[in-house]
Amino acid sequence: MSDIGFTAVLPEGWPRPRGYAQGVVTTGGRVLRVAGQTGVAPGAQHVAPDADFGAQFTQALANVVAVVQAAGGKAEHIVSLRAYLTQIGDFNAHGAAVGAAWGASLGRHFPAMTIVGVTALLDPAARVEIEAEAVLP
Image (tube, rainbow, N blue to C red; front, side, top):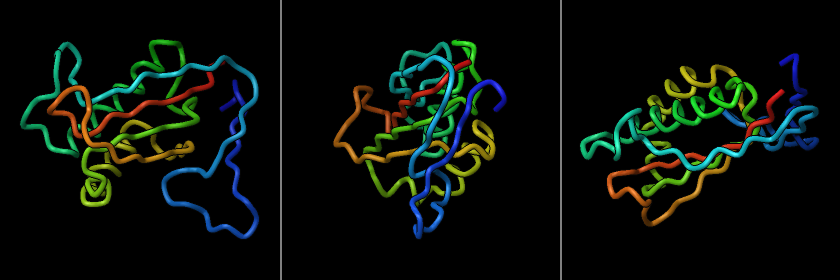
């Protein structure tokens, strides 16, 4: 990342987390806050009722990156993600799909991340919603 500074923060003695950073420090740039994105395919109005968690996570993360790109940024400008899940166990149960989605959208970039269990999302078919913050050049 040559246009903004991004440094992961890890308190001394803590083990390195897998797939995210405990915190990040950024320098330079403008802050973009991305609204919660669900697994709605571009051009659709709602999440497909038969879309499984892996497909929804993949599309939601791709939608986050699409918003960042529309603002002139790149996936590596994302500094924070929050994922809201209607079934908290889905994240681990579908780990292979989550990993594949991560690799396709973020590669080896690991921003700070929070996962929250919720009882429902606005779209009744949605099982995941992801919001983000990015620092753009």
